[in-house]
Image (cartoon, rainbow over all chains, first blue to last red; front, side, top):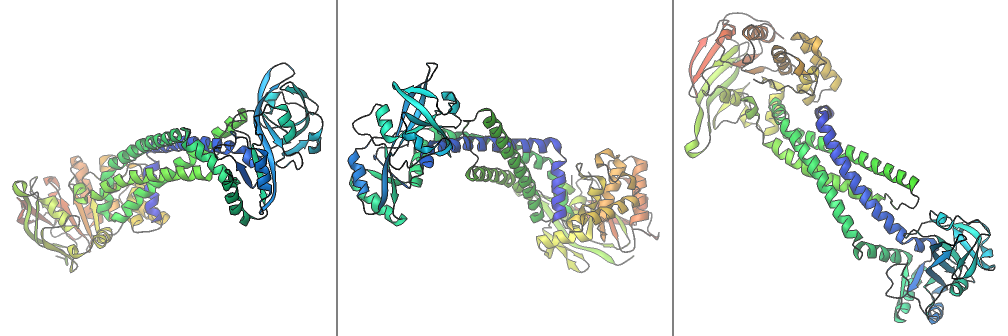
Length: 378
Length: 239
């Protein structure tokens, strides 16, 4: 069979114009499909950045919360209730909110302020410069050196600026595992200072971060919190809820799906028609092979090999091109949100297999119908 | 006469249905022998190609049978029949049907490749057969760069490489000039025909009748006469 497949390869690859058109069609379709889904994966990943960066096992929140960026403040009594639950090892509040920083040159920059529990500093970032304890110092803030860091002038330790007419001083620099979605810098301070600096509603706790005594305690905690009128979500469930919001309630998911389907149709149209034309042009030759003694099974194997080879070549080039584009984009725009995940690659591979399957199905039907007698009589 | 190579019995084939039905071949019986070059002649539409297609296992007859070495080829299954054609019959098509994207040697090697022979071994054998047909020096170029006569010889080499007992040539001189046509058939007669091989040739070309052992004439789907050809009593040695 190796020799037969080698003939199939030579028939295909030596027809350079068609081979190029086929590979380019698949490459283009795969590039679009992977690019679209990667951008969406990047958006989804960043939309849950705070959840990953804080790292709590269980998050307690108002039932109306849909994303981590839009918290609904809860009263302090909820924190006391949660702390009193038997399965809770500890529970701390966290503040998450937006504000404006007035920089030394008088310009303003939107930032995200994270207020960590004063006692435990639970959810703290990884320090790069300075000490975490310095956050307790007067007007202390820690700046995250992510891709948005330059927007507040890349401040060093000791730099000062204003937040709501309060003096703020950078006492440390830190890094987090994931950048945020909205392209604004992040500052960490203590929970109490966040309340002091930022205007607040009657209730102040954005989320309650809970560490259960064991994973088995989580269902009981969730049930107890639900009885209190709130929701307790594990980290994965919260990430899933945020993803679902962006997928299904913002139109982003629908648009992405449409673009992916269009890419698929473009790929199918170009490659399917070109492959079918290639088969039609070689139909008499396939008939001659049949007359010489090739079985239908071997002819089908040739066609499937040709379709598979073109598809996988295009798939490899398409994913490679997409990875290169994302790499270049990230080099020039650090906050460019796109991630090529295994899911993206598998989705694109599945669609390429469908393109190859549909293209070869028509071709196989045509080739199986050709009679050697038709060739013989010319 | 040598042993019987092919025995056709009552071959009948029609095409179409109802008012469009045409009887292409009607109750044709004949025998062809090893060591024989049998020409099948007749006007267009007389059923030559249809008859030869049934004999060579590529068109199933409506009735009748084809016995080759005592075996009814039309009693075989699809794959067995393909296997039979691959190993026992060599075809030279009227339009050659060479693959323009393969080299001349790769074209010739195709039957061996289908027989699952090693690629390198098949190409070596193909070069040997190209040498036999005088085209060894053209092995690595695509057949589209060859003349009509050279392409015909490549097609013959491809038909011969599997060492078939039966060789079927359809209008082998149709696209060649007179001298080239005679040279080709002379070559087949001289180098290809041997005591174990039976060669069937469909032709309209009276200029090559002198190479035939027998000439079978068909009209309206029937065999109307079988004559001795110009080479009826000539001994031969071939590949």
